[in-house]
Length: 306
Ligand SMILES: NC(=O)c1ccc[n+]([C@@H]2O[C@H](COP(=O)([O-])OP(=O)(O)OC[C@H]3O[C@@H](n4cnc5c(N)ncnc54)[C@H](OP(=O)(O)O)[C@@H]3O)[C@@H](O)[C@H]2O)c1
Image (cartoon, rainbow, N blue to C red):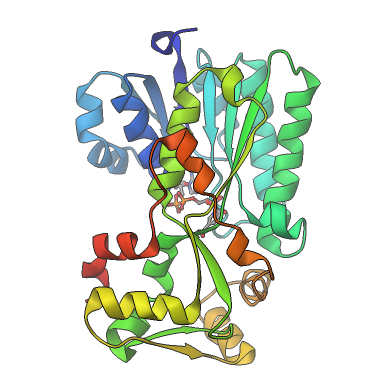
């Protein structure tokens, strides 16, 4: 099937990754449907893309199964992203299982699932890995039920660089510090969400057969907390140091902000011993350029930290 006959359905389309996927697909000339909760927000986000006539906006949620069932008809591919914020541990697998089943039954040939590197490293240990692991299991079962007709590709990214906008803006701006509960030499693995979107766009644009049943881990850089403070110092031009909080203080601070016990507990896990080997330069084979570094990301987002 040539790309002109393809129609791609994007869930989470108004989010960080989904919006990048929509923009990339439209740039590639592919008929795209953005599944969003808020039509006005989507119209604002995709002003240029709507002008091409190739973008359709459908308003629906993870609960509006009837809307999804009708809207997915005629599509050949699905980008499947579930936002776990405020959800119960089994919500992700329920929604992905339901949407995945309906999509395949309605003729979708390829699902590209946005999962997490936690699946590879932790299995079901910790709530984030648990949610993504059982959701993936449902999708693999659905795909393997009719392997000739159903293709599945799983993207497993590490921690998003954009999450620094939530955790680090306040301490960097007001205390000149990065603050976390891990040791200064503990490694965190990072990926720019644009790299994830770009990878999804390539997979959704190329032949279904080429990427069938691949699991693509995505990690642009692995660095210690101390090393990250050095990058912040260099880019911001002022001294930023790393402060290790006690586990108890860290847990109390983030649960006081409304983060659930399970999520907060998950965030306290020490980095795996082999975390520095998690970097995936091989993704450049797919996206045609190197993955972004934390320094590059910070230079582009410097205003938020000044
Ligand atoms: N953050 C990390 O470090 C990290 C690492 C690995 C994997 N992940 C995974 O990445 C995913 C999050 O991706 P992201 O950063 O692109 O998320 P995001 O920017 O928060 O966007 C979430 C999208 O989901 C939509 N959404 C939320 N609730 C919905 C509902 N009830 N029905 C329909 N749509 C709904 C949002 O719509 P609105 O625009 O209306 O809010 C938005 O389009 C999660 O699955 C997470 O587990 C994250």
